[in-house]
Image 1 (spheres, each protein chain N blue to C red):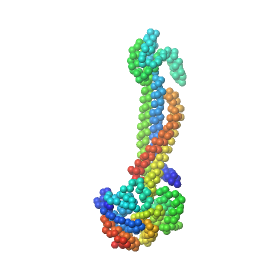
Image 2: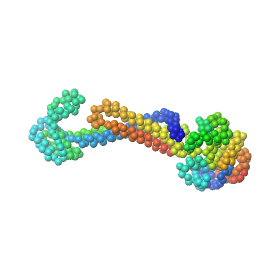
Image 3: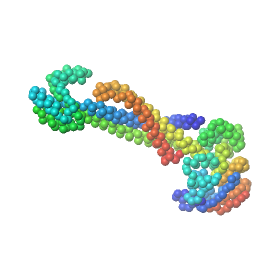
Image 4: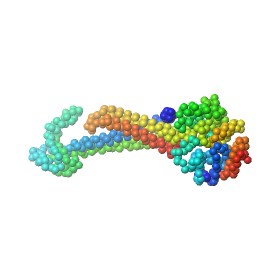
Length: 220
Length: 291
């Protein structure tokens, strides 16, 4: 498929075709402006392609009616470089918020949230506010929030971009564990260390085109 | 849980931006008060037209020096006229009695008026009140007639005045209403901005659109309803203080404003205030802030 942003001289993604299997762990790598973040936006239906289709879980996202988008997004978890936590809510409340706003009861939140915070290694820090947590811990909260609804797919847009190498590796271990529960993980990054250590499928994008698609690849 | 979530969001939203909320409620109140006043005037004028046009009379006043022959001529002409439904003759004495009753609240006026100064007249009820011009053409030239007064013309001036007041009130309602709408739109934009992080997360995790928008819309509706209730209070106060108070003599002559009409304004104003606020908020969210 092709995506051109208005006012852009060339397409952000130019005639790109990728197939990701259920349960896979895929890195999209490439320099800034190569179009790799556009993939995340397309998968979230934040933007639509000019040409071609985005199919998620056997559903054509491109032609989806706008009122169906919220339900569609509940199948997808998302983690960003800047964490995007709510500063006036504790770790627990941040994760519970994601459940409450899709209509889950407080009872469900009380049962599920401590579990998922334990899973991401934040047991005992439930009632800290984001500013009382380290960058790595904040990203764990974000991962917990993305995962609490047990999504089919976890999208990660440079999740280690603001973290030091050691913390980055911890976050990657966490994403790996989530992947092992059967969740598809799609991660956009330009962190070569991480890619080289994980040895997972690597799709390299340059100027909107796929230049490499390699199972168990390295940053190269 | 949802109800409580939405309510607490609405209250914190209104409180966070309390100066704007107050401005919104005040303009809303003024606008809705004027809307209510113009509706009441509209109902009132309609009721008065029904009431008075049925009782309308044409008076043929006779000259002070009218003689018996002239009077008899007029009387028989009236009897023969196809336009006339009924008529009666009022002597100077009867006119004086009626005058005393009519102005019993103004004894100075009564004592200053001499019984002889009131003219003798025929009071005519026409079959069709609109044919008054034809009628007066026939009788104006009759010997002994001094003047023909059509009450409809007098009433028309009163109705025109009330109609002008109604237009004025409606204009103020529209202008203030426009200001209120802009304030609602602004309040919603500010609220959406201050909650942009929450909104971004809600969209990301797949909260439904109505769930995201509902607190904002209800915030506006809440302000609209408060404005409507205050406007209703203003109308009730106006009824007690002016219509039944200092202007009672005037309003009795013009037909009193019923409580039932005032009460009718409560649902009308709440409906108008709430609905207009809700639509404005929704449009703002959808087209200006894209929440």
